[in-house]
Picture (tube, rainbow, N blue to C red):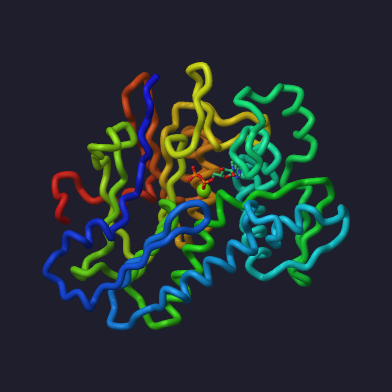
Length: 343
Ligand code: ADP
Ligand code: MG
């Protein structure tokens, strides 16, 4: 079976590296590890930002939202008693609220209560005991406790209540949220021109080093990792871009490929011809969650929803070995014309 290589949104820092003659003091680049992946930061400004400020911000978000830290605020919520309000931090409340909104919008395709299924399929913190697929009966046992409807929110008290024994997993939205918080930190420091990226979820502000909109490449996911090809180039000013797809995280068993994106309604990893989805919105948390939602929905349903809500979305699907692209009307304005790649 064909192994589809990871699609990456080539961070514009890669393009920046090629912008050779600009004065070095105008650009700062930082990178590191967070949330089980990497982050990069490109700042075009005379002001600088401290690496410590960035890493302590990321650390505080992980302490709040990680399922890999047993003492995180999220894990405390996962252990909290049923039918009891628990006050949470503004950050956690905001991310859970946004997640609930995207669940409603996507009719449950996006659902942070998917945690037990993620673990069962071996994509979460517990290492699976063997490499066998879960039994259908095991999935059925978990399904009654999957469902965003079992999470209540009280905006006044910033409190959360579980009405069933749900276990929340914010992996599909927390990276985007962290990108937004870094962007806020930069803007507060008077930095308007930047590109922030965590694990392929991006946010751009202002202009790049050449004084143009930031340019991001959507890679052809079927190109070899050693010879990556650009599928499309997009140009963005102040925007957030997230991608989702089964190229990044999956396992293969008996020739079948199992995605880390799970359909919460069936309990099974999604399996359709959609190879990657890219969403552009005003903030990265929303783009991140929507990209995952669209991945679960599949191209037809996702395209309808994107059109109805004027969401900029770009789809690549594998039709019998042929890569086919489609995009919603709102996405067109970001595409750089093919006959003018220097635009
Ligand atoms: P992608 O970039 O492919 O969307 P993300 O890292 O944003 O990947 O999200 C995938 C992670 O989200 C999974 O590893 C899992 O923890 C969680 N997840 C899987 N399926 C869903 C779903 N239907 N709704 C919300 N979260 C999900
Ligand atoms: Mg996501």
